[in-house]
Amino acid sequence: EKNAVSQGQRPFKFHIYSTFNFVHPDEEWPEGEKGRFRKCKHILVSLDEIKSPLTQKEYASQVTTFLQHLVKAFPDETFPIWMFTVSESPMSPTNCMPPYYLPRTTDHPCNDVLRDLFDSSKRTFPERVHLLDNTAISRAQLGENQEDIKATIALKIFVLVGKKVQEWRKSGQKGAIDGLHRGDVVEPNFELVPYDGWK
Image (cartoon, rainbow, N blue to C red; front, side):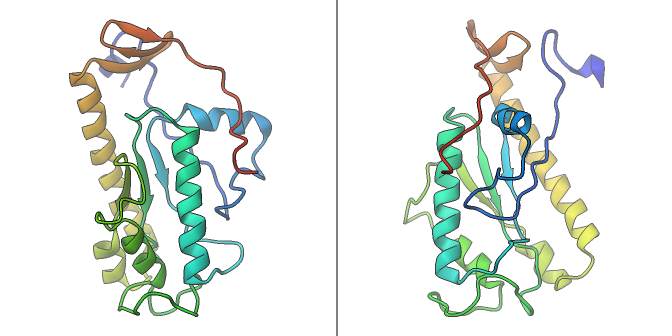
């Protein structure tokens, strides 16, 4: 609601950027969309539908590189990056195909990779890069009722985003029309140029 937004603050929005690969995610985006992509302050990654199936090792390598690129594209350390687990049924996976480099479990082979990458002892990514583990929801449905799964995950996202925004507000951080406010300091909005590191 309009009166729920503090004075001078931009309305809260979700932007969706569709992609089907981790290597050149923006290859089908119009030029303007490539720039707008860099306005994001919460980065949520859900990519179940890959153009070409990958092996587990290929998936691990591409996800790692992709998330490292996101860290560079969004260098502000207060902007969180969330990678979602795969919601596809583990009984008929279409990605993370053999040969497997990790022991097989009852979960989706891509989720085995994600849990391994986000193992806290490995420190693969900076602390602001997180795994959003939705397997308790998706595994219970065995790939069915996808709309119900998406709705439940959406509620989780609203809670996550709400908590982070609350944390920002307590520390005096907010995005406004004139830039990013951190207490009494205002960082002017930067020019929205596409991230070219994918190449």
